[in-house]
Length: 169
Image 1 (tube, helix red, strand yellow):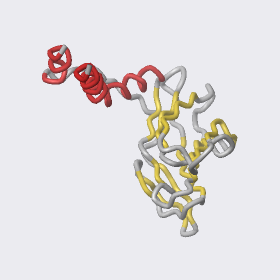
Image 2: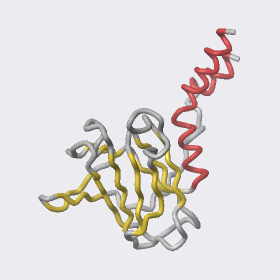
Image 3: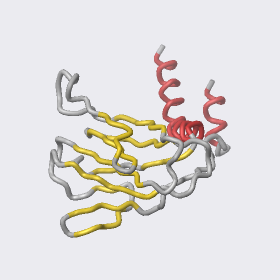
Image 4: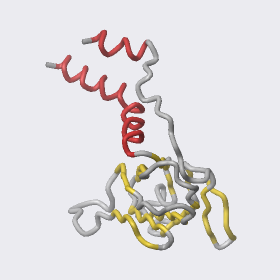
């Protein structure tokens, strides 16, 4: 069992070396009172608790037949708009029995087919000042490629956790 875990790690396994086909411009924008600013993701903008922070970008011509957005939120509500039409919303206020927001969640959002040249906006709101205006990495591409990439980033820790559980038995 140990060799099955360590050999791929030692050999620098090719698992997860997925060609990322991004469809967004590398530049995200944030509109504030001072004007429009460029934002590099991941980023933490200076936003007060319970204020909504929105960033946006324009979608390049499509290379794939379908696209999915993968992003992580931490203690945040999330809304995603495509040309000012809400296509995804995540909020736990109505059913969360305690606390103010979920600690962490990975979101998979499938985009509609006709997205070329449209404006995509991502809005987050957090009851905590340390997470207000925080945007983690935002990846866009094929659903299967993104899922494989996510597993590739975290498989060593997952295998190690399984090994520890088996060792404790």
